[in-house]
Amino acid sequence: MNESLHNVYPTQRIDVLGVRAHALDVASAKAAFKTALRRHIKGYVCFTSVHGVMEAQHDPALMKVYDDALVIAPDGMPLVWVGHMQGFRSMERVTGPEMMLEIMGGEEFRNCTHFLCGGETGMAEELRDKLVARFPHLKICGTFTPPFRPMKIDEERALIEAVHRAQPDIIWVGLGAPKQEYFMARYLPLLDTTLMMGVGAAFLLHTGRISDSPRWVKRSGLQWAHRLLQEPTRLWRRYLFHNPAFIVRIALQFARGTRKAPTPSVKPAEINTAQRAT
Image (cartoon, rainbow, N blue to C red):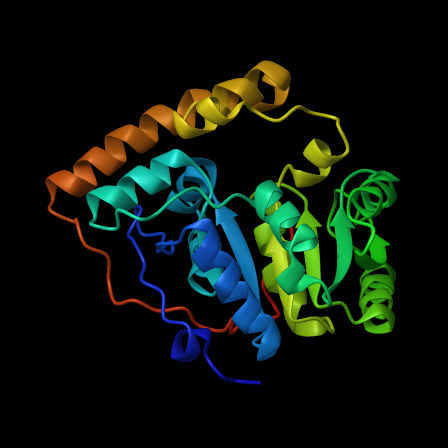
């Protein structure tokens, strides 16, 4: 179906250093996803944080992936604060791990089928078991663990065939940013599904490999520090370089007077299937 989500559920956007995130709260995000599923509007969803925004500053291909996303949700308080300064006071954090539970446990999504794609060997199956135990009505119809390297042709075929057999409504992709963004852009046109959602650390969080931040930490914008304490070796470079650079760049954006975002829109993904997967 070529119908645009914006035609039936218009949503405004903010401008975060060229990444046009949507001005959402949890309720409006769920309503947009429900509309897309009901009308079979195919697309991928990016839950984007400062890390993703800063990666896109020096990666035009990633910026194109964001441009082609069905929805870019504000995963992190810095994006929410930018939205507030651009006039969207109702914006709030809409994170991948939390949205995963909202949808899987939500009565309005009760008939949806789900497919888990990501994590290290065995993690998707462990996550499936934990989620079904938590939500007994949940329909998880398949799992797949991609390699950390680009997939070979036979591995791609295995994924395509597994999804074709399952035909899930939503594929949850937990590969970390920006790998999962490239993955969704590359494979969405090839897969029998409606939505792909890149949920980052959700696989780690919901299998208990890392702990969630307290609510006050999330609301204060300090979740990055909580994550850093748990995974210092992997994350220190990201936060040491990206966070200060983001503050400087966003200050310059506002100094130049970019306070309002461009035209509001949510569009279906029109993906170049030749885009690379990393």
